[in-house]
Image (cartoon, one colour):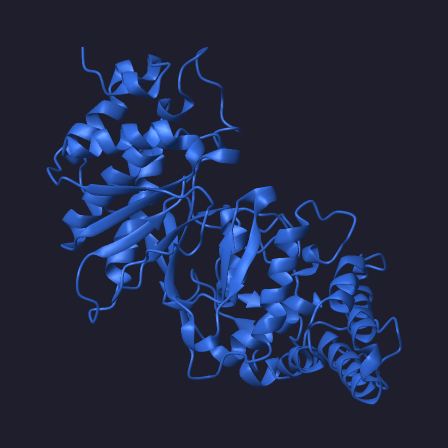
Length: 450
């Protein structure tokens, strides 16, 4: 259970003297600060940006005892952008509704609530508003900081200014026309406690390689009459952030996805999180430092996606392999990645609506590569193995679409050639786990039998 700052057990020292009562709670202080700011903006609309930033700084000082929160980047954004005052006021109004939407101030998390957590749109708006105000506590097990958007607010530390600007535009645009209570968002827990034996699986999985030079998200050639799943290269502790990673782009593009850092702050080793369909508010181009907002979709034209949050092994943190050998196939790394991906793909197969005909479509990036130092050919083979196992367990067809940039062109061609051979899960598993693979220095050598 995640305990919100509005819980009555949290007593405030009211450092700014906001409340005329003895032993005010954090909820009392936050409400008082918001009401004061709301009135001030209505009376002095020209000062809306400065008043909103001051509110965030006052909450940081009152609730977190942080008197040095840097909001200079946010202040510049609000002054230079076309953010409207009603959007700022909507954030305050949604924040004031949090206790109505969740009177207990106890948010169910996936481990507490069995295998799923369902959040209504009004509650999501209120939580997004609290994230915007920096008014939430760090969840248990989380080590990267507050589950809020305050990491987007500094100017001096913004190494990805175009990405951060896109995240802020998407957030404030959302509050121009926020979710309604008819909107519901589900987060499912899918694990790999039971998994078919890959030695025996004769399914022949399929994968389509798509070259995506500009990292266009969502893809422009998305299939019609389907709601694809997106395999997110998630951190073990998922959530929004100030850089241009694939996870952070999607956490912004579908604002409800930012609830993941509250409902499942630390992903289990053999599990993934699957979401219900979510509207995609923003289209993106680029990756990391080149990431930038391409477009904001009008409300009636927003594509839908379901998300799979699955963390790959951080191969840059494991013991190094023998000199020149591929780290991906050492120790039990393949086994771990296949179990994680099986939990992801089997969960997607179970979560796809029965009203959708056709295969389960999964859009995958170079999952576990880049910063985590994975080899895309090995990772793609793990995806194929996991997809075949998930098809055997679920009885559904799974169609993988792997999006690669031009720098991985040669590996993409190799993967296409491998897929064209129509090898079974059992055969692919043998290639990756046989003893000889551990001494291979080139990904192509893994698939050459003596």
